[in-house]
Length: 112
Length: 114
Image (cartoon, rainbow over all chains, first blue to last red; front, side, top):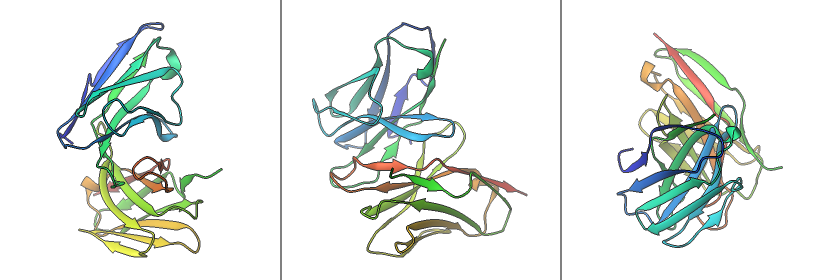
């Protein structure tokens, strides 16, 4: 969905490196989410934010941090990447009071 | 624990056939359900949703059926086309603050042959 963009689309990094994944949206939604997708495990929620400066942990937040300094942007950081963080990462947005979430195209991350 | 699961990880159909993808959920408090389609290299795309006060909802070539008695959700695709080939996920909202409690199933891969 072009309304939700993610950068980079692909990233290779080494164990111990700090990396940041960016998400931007033009849908005007106030809620944003970061998910991780692994083969056979579906989508798992890492963090979510209801509004600027609002941050909430999801199911698998350990090893990750996020920043929401503008309504349209939500970034995910891996402070010290490890190989089991190799996965496909998705950003999603939704409007307050509406459950439907709209997803970005994903970032494929490989940690060596 | 509570989870959303799909009965079959893969489904193969011929072009023109009707497809039925199933999903079982375990949380009776779930009040909203969504089907997503994920094509290779793309993010999940919203297909259709249904609230727990309904048992059927139709879209363009797609129908979602909800059976709360047996906690079962299905997605029916009419006249399946090669472009329908993708992974399909169901998701449930288990209540609480809207938009925060979507639980996703593991997905069914639909393959459509010509």
